[in-house]
Structure formats: structure tokens, C-alpha cells
Length: 412
Image (cartoon, rainbow, N blue to C red):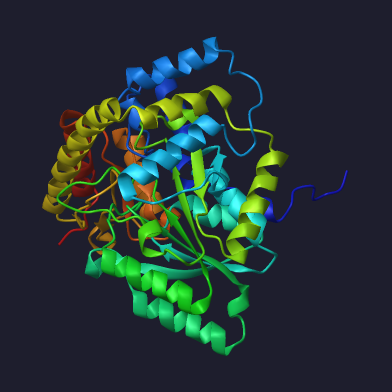
């Protein structure tokens, strides 16, 4: 056996959201209570609606248990087409959609289709941690741009334009295969303004860079914010929409995501064909779950009822937690308007803690509250809090965080 059997790329197979799981398991075995605010998993607090569960059971009884069409069952493709027509007035064609095992598999497909060793993608920091892991595992290099915290976590578009101009001058722009945004955003909770989306689309178009928009939280928007899908802004230019059932339809464990490549240009057609090839390599996605999600999308009345309850609860929890965080002298945060994450900045100069790793680790072990370190999202001065639980649970967790910060404060 060779001394080094593992590939170099496997070193990037890390998920900062789950890195404390073994500690949590050992604490629970000792009878300790742990409040898990690390993972955006709605069904923990909002059981998947009964009509979706019933549709899953019906799919099992109908014997939809074998391999299904690699690109996705036609019933689900049809439901996705109806959803985009109904919600966004976008015409999506049957062959524009590839169903994936969550957005994570969609990212893997995207990189497998586009990235050669040493190619690059523009990623905005703070980013969803899987963007970085998936890109690096496929031999890609990130070009980091940023969401600007001082501007409500909106994109610094001038910086992006300058970066791509530099690469163009160096004759390296052809190495940049795509640019990915998240809207609404994980981990900041920002809903990007339409004007910002228009600028990003212009920059991608001017530089011939494929634009990818992760819109998995597109219906979890509140505090008066308005969501605009990139598919309305980027009409006529190559782009990819990533979405799925995990968040809006409260069904994370079903592992149903999808990619939409709606345009007809040469690049889009090549990409669609290759994504279909990749789907065939892995055979199929969970078959009964696809039928259940088709029903989830088609039963608009039941969906809207469940969604209203979930979003109003999330809005209350996020706004409560945001106020509590801003009352803590060691933390500050921009109020989110979408998704269910909060990304507080930590004043480490006032604390006897060297970094976000130490904070997350010590908070978990001493207080039984599990957060995620901001550095896993490219934001090392921050921590990420999932604000899905009701006010009572969040309030208890906030009390623990306040006490912990006070105990670890430097003497003035």
C-alpha cells in the first residue's frame, strides 16, 4: 500500500456547519442538553406539512420506488415549470430543468461540467460554505469578492468590475467559469436589491462569465423586503438558477433540488446536455420524494398556508434575536430580511477569546449552545446563528451567549 492513498483534493472535503457534531454527540450521551443553532433545518421546528407527507406515502403505495428518469420525473419537472410561470412569469421548458439531490449535488454537477484544474469561479464572501468546498474539491480556484457589511451586506459591484478588468488585461478572464450569488443570502440573511442584481448581470454579461443564482430561500422573505429572481433580470444571457424543496417546502431530508438553465444560446445548450449526462452517471434522485415535491408545488393553497405560518414565525424569531444581539455590548449585526440566519460581528478586542473557533468551541462545551464559526463562511470576525427556534428557546440561548461573553470579557 502506498504511503499516501488519499487525493490532495480530498483535503477540501470539510463542512464547518457540522464540525462540532462529535462533541455534541458526546455531550448528549452524558445527558447534557444542547441547543443546536448551527444547522438550517426547518422540519426540526416546523414539521413537514401533512399534505406533503401524504403525497410521499401515496407515491410509495403507487410503487414509485424504482430508478426514475435521470433528469427528474416529468411530474416534478411540470410542477417546477408551473411554479416559475405562476410566481415569476418565466417560461421554463422541459429540458431546461435537471433535478438534483439538493443544491449540493447541483454545485457538484456545475463544477464537474465547467471546471478544469486551475479554472476559477467568483464567490462572494461571506459565502455558503459548500460553494468553496465543492469548487476546491473539483480543482477550482476561488476569486473572492465581497458582500459589504457597511452597506447592509449588499455587493460591492465596483470591486467585481475592477477584478474582472484586471483578469482581462492579464488575459486570464477565460479561466473564470462562473460567478455565484445567493439571494436571499446564507449566512447574512440579506435580500439583494433589484438594482444590485441588474449590475451583477451587466458585469457577468460584459465579461462573458456564466451567472449562477442560488435562490433556495426565495419565499422566505420578510420585514417588507422584496425578492427578485435572477431569471427575470438575466433574460437573454447564459445563467443558471439553483433551487429546491428543502427550505420553502420544509423538506430538507427529501434531498430534492433542481437546476434551471433557461436560455437557448450555445453555452446554455452545451451545459444542459452535460448536466443531463452527469445526472445519468448517478442514475436518479429519490423517486418517491420527487412525486411528493411535485404535489407540494402544485397544491398552492396548502403550501401558502404552511409557508405563511413558517415565515411569520421566522420573522418574529429573527427580529427578536437581532435585537438581543445588538443589546449585547460585544456583538453587532445587520438585521436580516430573508432566510433564517443571523451573522453577528464579534468584538474580539473586548473578549479573552482569540477567534471564532475558540468562541464556538467554548460556548458549546460550557453553555450547551452550538453555533457555527463565521470563518467557515469566509467571515472570521463573525459567528452564524440559525434563528429557526421559537422565542423561548432563542431567548434561553441568547441568555447563555450574553453570560458567556460577560464571563469572557477583558477588564476595561
